[in-house]
Image (tube, rainbow, N blue to C red):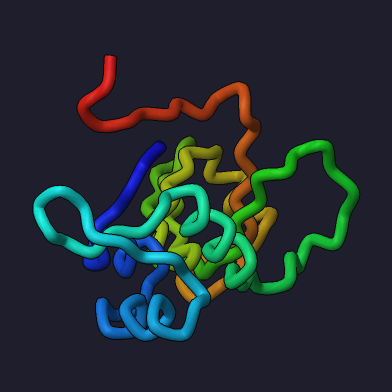
Length: 133
């Protein structure tokens, strides 16, 4: 079972340490002291809270797709040469970078400030953890 200290939990939820402590006091999260005397919360409970509180902008594409990993965001930069382009999106706290043809950038009308959706197929996602083999 994974336990996270209050500050780390707050980082994952995008709130302050005080907010996490308040949620523990109000019973929204269960906290307890670890062997070092630090308040920790259960990672599984934290994950459930994060999922319940997640807010995603409406996907402007409004198309059916088998891809479930859809990140709506703002285009923050476009770097192009005659053939290829690099497009950066800010999707919530996540920076997503995509390489595509310059023709696709022009066809999609991508420019800084545009709303776009990054679609990631799960077969191309690598998952890492810290300190585990």
